[in-house]
Image (tube, rainbow, N blue to C red; front, side, top):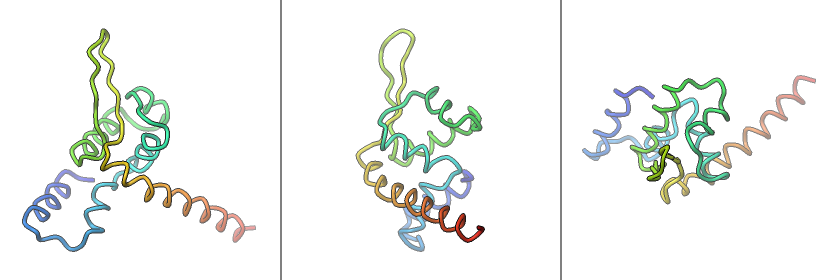
Length: 123
């Protein structure tokens, strides 16, 4: 999601001038990779940056970084740096982020069913 749109939504929320709660939810999960990032972190647990990159070979370093930063900024994902050499960094879901997991899983199940429907319609 563009930075301008994210800032606009945040300003409207702070001013109590938003259209509906669904708008906030969509602004948080909008992004090509956010839902799948959330699914992996929520279902599989914490991942290092390089592990996430391997899961999504077509994602660029910059895009993954931006998607994670936005999720962190929204309080959905946390970044933990472990004091060791070399430094170890892990990303995991926050308590608030875990409350999104049922929604993400329902999206996954709906998508799976819809793919099957489309396959049957095209046969």
